[in-house]
Amino acid sequence: MTKKERGKGFFISEMKAGPIKSAEDILGKCVICDSCLGRQFGQISTGMTNKQRGCIIRGMLKEGPLEGTCEICEGLFQGGIREWSGKAVKRLQGLEYRSFVVGSRLSRDLVRNEEKLWGMAGISHCEPMKTEVNRELGKLICKKTGKDVDELRPDVVLLLDLTRNEIRLQVNSLFIYGEYQKLVRGIPQTKWETYKTSVEDEVARPVMKATRGSGHSFHGSGREDVDALCLGWRPFVLEITEPRKRRINLRKMLTEMNRSKKVNVRKLRYSDRKEVAALKSSRNDKKYRLLVQFEKPCRDEELKKLKNLIGMIKQRTPERVLHRRSDLLRKRRVKSLVWRRVSNKRLEIEIKGEAGLYVKELMTGDNGRTEPSVSGVLGNKAKVVELDVIKIEKVE
Ligand SMILES: [Zn+2]
Image (tube, rainbow, N blue to C red; front, side):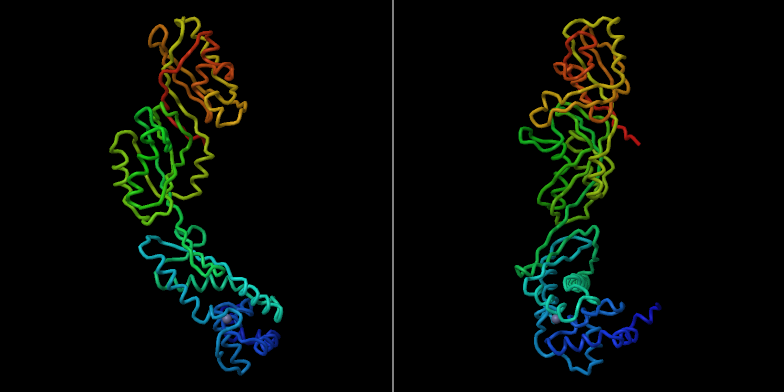
């Protein structure tokens, strides 16, 4: 089929081949506008609007233009949509966005009218009313705002709800990717009432101010304990809900995030919801540095046994998190372990483990819930004095 065949001439000849009879039937029974008439034959050819199709059909049947309100769309395509587009643009004022998408809910009456039309003329060539509403409203908003329709990743969703006679605005979240180091102990990764601040608070504060969002969430690739430093760069995505502004100066944000010296952030860039899912499912190896205090002096002979810990570790969910996690047995690999004596009863241990390895429990044994453990192997009760994440390695 050539492009020309999709035009007016092609449409007329296809109509003449049969469908014109049902068009005549519709015109005999309904007060119907060009858009609603044309929409019933929307799939016959491309390259024109339903309104144009309806006009052509009317011409073919030597019918004059419609006087009065269409009983199918109840005037929606005779100026109603234009009015809604004005309301939509008003709602969008003061909002920064690049793209939008329109959705709609038809009233029960409109659905019934459409079904009546389908009952008369069938559905073999028609386009649903809802599709035309969304498209035509989208076109008008496009024209008035200069913004694009983006069906996949719109910044804004406009919902025309004709069951309630209102237009609703949903501003989609803004996502910002970054990587952080936590430079002080005693702050949690995400906001927590018990603590004055968190990595999330430090990172979100300047962005909230710049975007005037209604809230924020922090999606980290794993997390470190409140009392642990994180010297490795941990990827995260900051989500700002309902931002009024989306294009912000990320370099300036970075400077402000790093001002407190509690966190150090790098590589800020815009991101999306898809990356949050990828981040949550990523399994990174982590390297830790621990300062461990023992009950009894550690003998060099005994310490040689520590290398036996390299390999598979069986861990039941730690006692300290049992109140919020289910009791499971998991197997995690220790990939490397080196130690250095700090004093008679104190060691510095560097350990590399798979994602999900509980390293504190690997030291203490967690009352037999982690097997084997440093404490168990040495027969010497161990307590973690300091724990830092020193490297986060992406596993390919
Ligand atoms: Zn109509």
